[in-house]
Image (cartoon, rainbow, N blue to C red; front, side, top):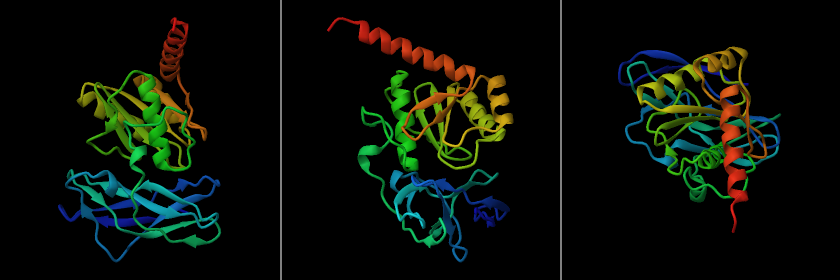
Length: 245
């Protein structure tokens, strides 16, 4: 079960409550990072793909998976990276260590074939692959970290990929929409665990496309805005197949 801990920002000294996210292992058991209570959080000054991920072992099946490093955004504008000692999952617990996700799976260079989702990195790759089908060829890691999950960006577009086991909330959708508005960009939300009713209603009001990523790596539309994008993809795919060789 996820825990809530008090985190003090080293920049402004304010304290906030942080709930540790849980991620779903391929065996179906939630895996939760274990925070190092004896170490202080550090401010994220420069983003590095390798440092944004940790490797956790599922306590139920023993699988190792790459998941987002726990972070918290302070109201003062500082992004805080929380130290971890390992992870827990299943009936028992299994430790984990920081690790480097495979380079060939970085956003912007996804495989042409469907991506079976076993880790958060797979979810990011599946979302990036779908965005490429939409015609966004320059998919990269977003400069600004979203409220939860992983942010992707392309010219004129922001996408949020949420690999946690909790359905996305209204605040998550609204924060993505507000960030996109400030950058004069469209936005898309991808989630593994679905969306709360308030989140779906808010997305419909703001016209934010919501997609559910299934275990096969397929992005399935959840609302009308997403269905319109899906229809565009199908139309373009059909047009390409109809072209003479």
